[in-house]
Length: 275
Picture: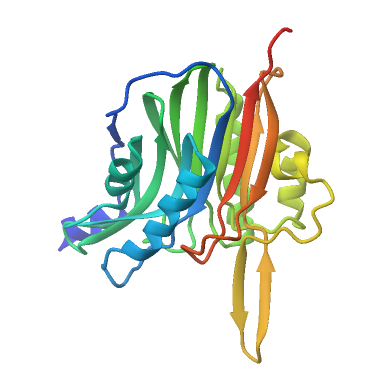
Protein backbone atom coordinates (compact mmCIF):
# COMPACT_ATOMS: atom_id res chain seq x y z
CA UNK A 1 0.00 0.00 0.00
CA UNK A 2 2.82 2.40 0.86
CA UNK A 3 4.42 1.86 -2.55
CA UNK A 4 1.11 2.54 -4.27
CA UNK A 5 0.60 5.83 -2.42
CA UNK A 6 4.21 6.81 -3.10
CA UNK A 7 3.65 6.15 -6.82
CA UNK A 8 0.70 8.55 -6.89
CA UNK A 9 2.62 11.19 -4.95
CA UNK A 10 5.70 10.78 -7.12
CA UNK A 11 6.53 13.61 -9.52
CA UNK A 12 9.87 12.32 -10.82
CA UNK A 13 8.53 10.48 -13.85
CA UNK A 14 10.03 10.02 -17.29
CA UNK A 15 8.92 11.67 -20.51
CA UNK A 16 7.67 9.49 -23.33
CA UNK A 17 8.91 10.60 -26.77
CA UNK A 18 7.81 8.98 -30.02
CA UNK A 19 9.18 10.32 -33.31
CA UNK A 20 7.43 8.69 -36.23
CA UNK A 21 7.64 11.58 -38.71
CA UNK A 22 11.14 12.74 -39.66
CA UNK A 23 10.76 14.71 -42.87
CA UNK A 24 11.33 18.47 -42.71
CA UNK A 25 9.46 20.86 -45.04
CA UNK A 26 10.63 24.12 -46.50
CA UNK A 27 10.85 27.06 -44.13
CA UNK A 28 7.49 28.80 -43.96
CA UNK A 29 4.92 29.82 -41.38
CA UNK A 30 4.04 27.46 -38.54
CA UNK A 31 0.78 27.24 -36.59
CA UNK A 32 0.66 26.45 -32.87
CA UNK A 33 -2.54 25.33 -31.15
CA UNK A 34 -3.04 24.97 -27.40
CA UNK A 35 -5.96 23.08 -25.83
CA UNK A 36 -7.13 21.63 -22.54
CA UNK A 37 -8.74 18.35 -23.63
CA UNK A 38 -10.72 17.78 -20.39
CA UNK A 39 -10.06 14.28 -19.04
CA UNK A 40 -12.91 12.02 -17.92
CA UNK A 41 -11.83 11.08 -14.37
CA UNK A 42 -13.32 9.38 -12.38
CA UNK A 43 -14.67 7.75 -15.52
CA UNK A 44 -12.05 6.00 -17.63
CA UNK A 45 -13.92 5.96 -20.92
CA UNK A 46 -12.11 7.16 -24.05
CA UNK A 47 -13.66 10.49 -25.20
CA UNK A 48 -13.75 9.42 -28.84
CA UNK A 49 -16.47 11.78 -30.15
CA UNK A 50 -14.92 14.85 -28.51
CA UNK A 51 -11.44 14.00 -29.75
CA UNK A 52 -12.73 13.49 -33.29
CA UNK A 53 -13.91 17.10 -33.22
CA UNK A 54 -10.48 18.16 -31.97
CA UNK A 55 -8.81 16.28 -34.84
CA UNK A 56 -11.07 18.13 -37.28
CA UNK A 57 -10.02 21.44 -35.73
CA UNK A 58 -6.31 20.61 -35.98
CA UNK A 59 -6.70 19.66 -39.63
CA UNK A 60 -8.72 22.78 -40.43
CA UNK A 61 -6.08 25.02 -38.84
CA UNK A 62 -3.29 22.93 -40.39
CA UNK A 63 -1.59 23.10 -37.01
CA UNK A 64 2.06 22.10 -36.85
CA UNK A 65 2.59 22.06 -33.07
CA UNK A 66 0.03 21.14 -30.39
CA UNK A 67 0.34 22.09 -26.71
CA UNK A 68 -2.08 19.89 -24.78
CA UNK A 69 -3.28 19.59 -21.19
CA UNK A 70 -5.43 17.03 -19.34
CA UNK A 71 -4.22 14.31 -21.69
CA UNK A 72 -5.66 11.10 -20.27
CA UNK A 73 -3.89 7.72 -20.29
CA UNK A 74 -5.52 4.53 -18.99
CA UNK A 75 -4.27 0.97 -18.88
CA UNK A 76 -6.12 0.29 -22.16
CA UNK A 77 -5.84 3.54 -24.12
CA UNK A 78 -3.83 6.72 -24.42
CA UNK A 79 -5.01 10.01 -25.88
CA UNK A 80 -1.57 11.28 -26.89
CA UNK A 81 -0.78 8.12 -28.86
CA UNK A 82 -4.18 8.08 -30.55
CA UNK A 83 -3.86 11.72 -31.58
CA UNK A 84 -0.32 11.17 -32.85
CA UNK A 85 -1.57 8.33 -35.07
CA UNK A 86 -4.63 10.22 -36.29
CA UNK A 87 -2.64 13.36 -37.11
CA UNK A 88 0.65 11.70 -38.12
CA UNK A 89 2.62 13.70 -35.57
CA UNK A 90 5.52 13.13 -33.23
CA UNK A 91 4.70 13.29 -29.53
CA UNK A 92 6.20 13.92 -26.09
CA UNK A 93 4.06 13.12 -23.06
CA UNK A 94 4.55 13.25 -19.29
CA UNK A 95 2.25 12.12 -16.49
CA UNK A 96 1.12 14.82 -14.07
CA UNK A 97 -1.48 13.12 -11.86
CA UNK A 98 -2.84 9.65 -11.24
CA UNK A 99 -1.37 6.19 -11.65
CA UNK A 100 -2.52 3.89 -14.42
CA UNK A 101 -1.13 0.74 -12.72
CA UNK A 102 -3.16 1.29 -9.53
CA UNK A 103 -5.96 3.71 -10.43
CA UNK A 104 -6.02 2.58 -14.09
CA UNK A 105 -5.97 6.25 -14.97
CA UNK A 106 -3.54 9.14 -15.25
CA UNK A 107 -3.48 12.52 -16.93
CA UNK A 108 -0.65 14.73 -18.10
CA UNK A 109 0.63 17.26 -20.59
CA UNK A 110 1.82 16.65 -24.12
CA UNK A 111 3.49 18.32 -27.08
CA UNK A 112 2.72 17.04 -30.57
CA UNK A 113 4.64 18.16 -33.64
CA UNK A 114 4.81 17.59 -37.38
CA UNK A 115 8.55 18.19 -37.02
CA UNK A 116 11.12 16.07 -35.17
CA UNK A 117 11.28 16.39 -31.38
CA UNK A 118 14.97 16.54 -30.47
CA UNK A 119 14.59 16.18 -26.71
CA UNK A 120 12.20 16.98 -23.89
CA UNK A 121 12.40 18.23 -20.31
CA UNK A 122 9.99 18.55 -17.38
CA UNK A 123 9.65 21.33 -14.87
CA UNK A 124 7.70 20.31 -11.79
CA UNK A 125 5.95 23.25 -10.18
CA UNK A 126 5.42 23.65 -6.46
CA UNK A 127 1.85 22.88 -5.45
CA UNK A 128 1.14 22.39 -1.76
CA UNK A 129 -2.65 22.67 -1.92
CA UNK A 130 -3.16 18.89 -2.11
CA UNK A 131 -0.50 16.16 -1.98
CA UNK A 132 -2.21 14.19 -4.75
CA UNK A 133 -2.49 17.13 -7.17
CA UNK A 134 0.65 18.06 -9.09
CA UNK A 135 1.41 20.74 -11.67
CA UNK A 136 4.14 20.83 -14.27
CA UNK A 137 5.40 22.21 -17.57
CA UNK A 138 6.67 20.00 -20.39
CA UNK A 139 9.18 21.44 -22.85
CA UNK A 140 10.05 19.89 -26.20
CA UNK A 141 12.82 21.19 -28.42
CA UNK A 142 11.53 20.97 -31.98
CA UNK A 143 13.55 21.10 -35.18
CA UNK A 144 11.34 23.24 -37.42
CA UNK A 145 12.40 23.96 -41.02
CA UNK A 146 13.21 27.50 -39.86
CA UNK A 147 15.37 26.47 -36.92
CA UNK A 148 14.92 25.11 -33.43
CA UNK A 149 12.12 26.30 -31.22
CA UNK A 150 11.18 25.33 -27.66
CA UNK A 151 7.50 24.43 -27.26
CA UNK A 152 6.14 24.26 -23.70
CA UNK A 153 2.77 22.99 -22.54
CA UNK A 154 1.65 23.74 -18.98
CA UNK A 155 -1.36 23.49 -16.67
CA UNK A 156 -1.23 25.69 -13.57
CA UNK A 157 -2.94 25.67 -10.18
CA UNK A 158 -6.34 27.24 -9.52
CA UNK A 159 -5.09 28.64 -6.19
CA UNK A 160 -4.00 32.27 -6.83
CA UNK A 161 -0.84 32.36 -4.67
CA UNK A 162 0.36 29.00 -5.99
CA UNK A 163 -0.52 30.07 -9.52
CA UNK A 164 1.57 33.23 -9.17
CA UNK A 165 4.54 31.28 -7.81
CA UNK A 166 4.30 28.71 -10.62
CA UNK A 167 4.37 31.44 -13.24
CA UNK A 168 7.49 32.83 -11.58
CA UNK A 169 9.09 29.37 -11.66
CA UNK A 170 8.39 29.02 -15.37
CA UNK A 171 9.74 32.49 -16.01
CA UNK A 172 13.04 31.66 -14.27
CA UNK A 173 13.21 28.38 -16.20
CA UNK A 174 12.62 29.99 -19.59
CA UNK A 175 15.16 32.75 -19.01
CA UNK A 176 17.90 30.13 -19.15
CA UNK A 177 16.85 28.80 -22.57
CA UNK A 178 18.82 29.64 -25.72
CA UNK A 179 16.11 29.26 -28.33
CA UNK A 180 12.88 31.11 -29.02
CA UNK A 181 10.09 29.70 -26.89
CA UNK A 182 6.38 29.15 -27.35
CA UNK A 183 4.58 28.72 -24.03
CA UNK A 184 0.96 27.68 -24.09
CA UNK A 185 -1.58 26.11 -21.82
CA UNK A 186 -4.29 26.46 -19.23
CA UNK A 187 -2.95 29.13 -16.85
CA UNK A 188 -6.06 29.12 -14.63
CA UNK A 189 -5.64 32.89 -14.33
CA UNK A 190 -7.93 35.45 -15.89
CA UNK A 191 -6.56 38.24 -18.04
CA UNK A 192 -7.45 40.95 -15.52
CA UNK A 193 -5.24 39.45 -12.78
CA UNK A 194 -1.97 41.17 -11.87
CA UNK A 195 0.10 38.06 -12.60
CA UNK A 196 -1.13 37.82 -16.19
CA UNK A 197 -0.79 41.57 -16.73
CA UNK A 198 2.80 41.34 -15.49
CA UNK A 199 3.88 38.61 -17.91
CA UNK A 200 2.07 40.35 -20.76
CA UNK A 201 4.61 43.14 -20.26
CA UNK A 202 7.49 40.65 -20.38
CA UNK A 203 6.37 38.10 -22.99
CA UNK A 204 4.40 38.55 -26.19
CA UNK A 205 0.76 37.57 -25.78
CA UNK A 206 0.05 36.27 -29.28
CA UNK A 207 -3.69 36.97 -29.07
CA UNK A 208 -3.32 40.56 -27.83
CA UNK A 209 -0.48 41.22 -30.28
CA UNK A 210 -2.89 40.73 -33.18
CA UNK A 211 -6.17 41.59 -31.45
CA UNK A 212 -5.39 44.35 -28.91
CA UNK A 213 -9.03 45.50 -28.69
CA UNK A 214 -10.65 42.05 -28.43
CA UNK A 215 -13.47 42.93 -26.00
CA UNK A 216 -14.19 39.63 -24.25
CA UNK A 217 -11.83 36.83 -25.32
CA UNK A 218 -13.04 34.08 -22.98
CA UNK A 219 -11.81 30.48 -23.31
CA UNK A 220 -13.66 28.86 -20.40
CA UNK A 221 -17.26 29.02 -19.17
CA UNK A 222 -18.47 28.04 -15.72
CA UNK A 223 -22.21 27.68 -15.07
CA UNK A 224 -23.37 28.90 -11.66
CA UNK A 225 -26.73 28.59 -9.86
CA UNK A 226 -29.63 30.79 -10.93
CA UNK A 227 -28.50 30.66 -14.57
CA UNK A 228 -25.41 32.71 -13.92
CA UNK A 229 -22.30 32.06 -15.95
CA UNK A 230 -18.65 33.08 -15.56
CA UNK A 231 -16.65 33.39 -18.78
CA UNK A 232 -12.92 33.98 -18.49
CA UNK A 233 -9.82 33.80 -20.59
CA UNK A 234 -7.66 31.10 -18.97
CA UNK A 235 -5.78 29.75 -22.00
CA UNK A 236 -2.83 31.57 -23.59
CA UNK A 237 0.01 31.24 -26.07
CA UNK A 238 3.04 33.40 -25.32
CA UNK A 239 6.05 34.01 -27.56
CA UNK A 240 9.35 34.53 -25.72
CA UNK A 241 12.49 35.47 -27.62
CA UNK A 242 15.68 37.36 -26.75
CA UNK A 243 15.89 38.92 -30.19
CA UNK A 244 13.24 39.11 -32.92
CA UNK A 245 13.27 35.83 -34.84
CA UNK A 246 9.56 35.13 -35.25
CA UNK A 247 6.69 37.42 -36.22
CA UNK A 248 3.04 36.74 -35.36
CA UNK A 249 0.90 36.60 -38.50
CA UNK A 250 -2.43 35.66 -36.94
CA UNK A 251 -3.95 34.41 -33.69
CA UNK A 252 -7.34 33.63 -32.27
CA UNK A 253 -9.74 31.59 -30.16
CA UNK A 254 -11.70 28.85 -31.89
CA UNK A 255 -15.41 28.83 -31.09
CA UNK A 256 -16.57 26.39 -33.78
CA UNK A 257 -15.36 23.05 -32.36
CA UNK A 258 -16.69 22.06 -28.92
CA UNK A 259 -14.47 19.23 -27.68
CA UNK A 260 -13.89 20.34 -24.07
CA UNK A 261 -14.93 22.77 -21.35
CA UNK A 262 -12.13 24.98 -22.73
CA UNK A 263 -11.80 26.59 -26.15
CA UNK A 264 -8.63 26.12 -28.16
CA UNK A 265 -6.29 29.04 -28.80
CA UNK A 266 -3.95 29.26 -31.76
CA UNK A 267 -1.23 31.42 -33.28
CA UNK A 268 0.52 31.49 -36.65
CA UNK A 269 4.19 32.51 -36.71
CA UNK A 270 6.63 33.21 -39.51
CA UNK A 271 10.41 33.62 -39.36
CA UNK A 272 11.75 37.16 -39.64
CA UNK A 273 14.19 37.25 -42.54
CA UNK A 274 16.97 39.77 -43.08
CA UNK A 275 15.20 40.92 -46.24
